[in-house]
Length: 420
Image 1 (tube, rainbow, N blue to C red):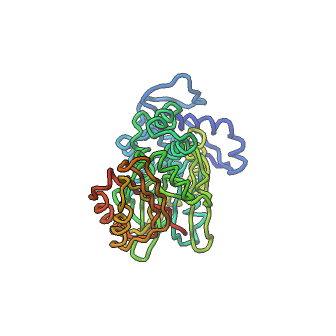
Image 2: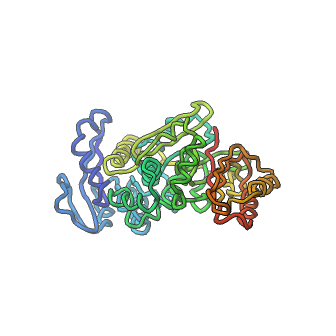
Image 3: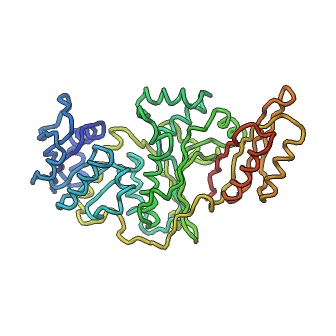
């Protein structure tokens, strides 16, 4: 039996899940892997006397883990950037392995971190073993695209808005009450959390640097039940997706609300679940789905990384060869089909004005929903689904549309999921 002695930094939901999983499933883990995991120290900035540490020592200084000679591997679960990064770097530089669930540190500082003895399966999509799949299970494949739902908070909120017909603010309050959204929900609802995760997937699948600042990011604050209903009428659901696509001239890397056809499996992933679809040359289209957050689910990925480190201590966590020739494409260069909701006065000739502007930018219309108003001059929506066009052309068309006297408010634009 191979043994590994670990220290855990943090004592929140995930850390407690790791302690429980290691205690409750110890025999199963040992039988399957031949690895015995011993937690010798837990360090957290605040003590939680009610948590069973299963015999491990406790300290309130996470840096104590660096000086404890018994510890071979540190599990970083404190979150944030500053102290967490300091601990990770200190551990790697002192010869200790690291397992972390910290997506922000990896996405923002991954280029600075030693790439040996670092594992971060739990940083992306919780219990879904997507990083193991990209690095090892699909190692023989060239990847053409990776896309999916990688933030459970946004997926829960959009699912609830669709099912109940209520608005963003009301659903956000409920998500916070249920613990699905933080008191400050910015990272989730504005897409930052998903962009951190997409940055990591991009580095693994396409051999780029960790380039978070080049990922295009949009959140879900502007989505309304009206848009959800129009999308359904057109045969789509609105999902918040992270999308990576490889091209000869570079890589698309974008996070935003997306219209997904009802026939796609991802369209039916609801609640707090995550789903990641990988398209590659040999394996074809594969879909990974499961819980993307939560103490037990994330703990499952953490323990898998601990065992993997014990068995393969010299295996690098990411490919050390970076292909600097692969540029991240600006969003203006990508092509997409678009959903447009154009609020207009109900007057003669408005639809003709709209279509003339789109035509002048070579934007073709695929489908139209136009409701009649009850009174002349009241505001009504013209809803269009366009064929593929370059984002730069759409931006110019939207600027002209919003300048029309007959257009009463900002045009709502949602991209349509690419067809792989």
